[in-house]
Length: 185
Image (tube, rainbow, N blue to C red; front, side, top):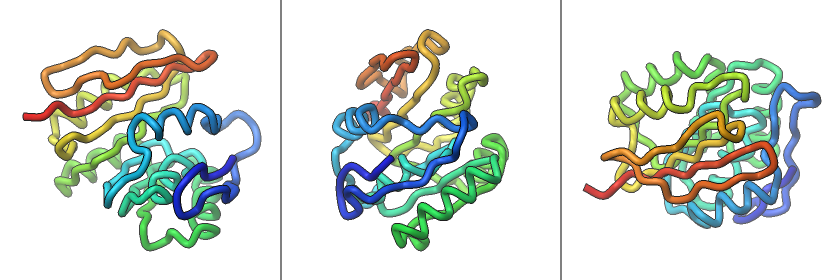
């Protein structure tokens, strides 16, 4: 796996061996970033299921100002730390080795808002709708914020709301991606 564009273009990233995390294929990642960016200006990023940290590190490479990465798995957290260190992104990242619910409550209490949120939970969990509801209810989205969701095909059915519109929805093999954007008020 590698960084596709920006200041760290072509830099390689470590991933966990085995099936505990599913690194996003470069082709899928490139398509997502071409849809939501491709470059950012000081955006604040939340990666709620960090895995290897690749989505956050790609965002930072493309101009995001800071990334909050949440990962409950200790081995995955070790890989994320190594990737951050290899790219010298320590000052642009904040890591949380917590369950996603704990992290979301921390962000709620801090009244933190994000420009880009990546939701790629373990496929066995069917929690995208629950997380989006929490984020919207607790006003955690900046104006024109984007939420990128990846899930098992047909495991979640994206719908537009009075807050979120579907910017793009597409399928890759057994995965599906939905990109939401906060509607302008």
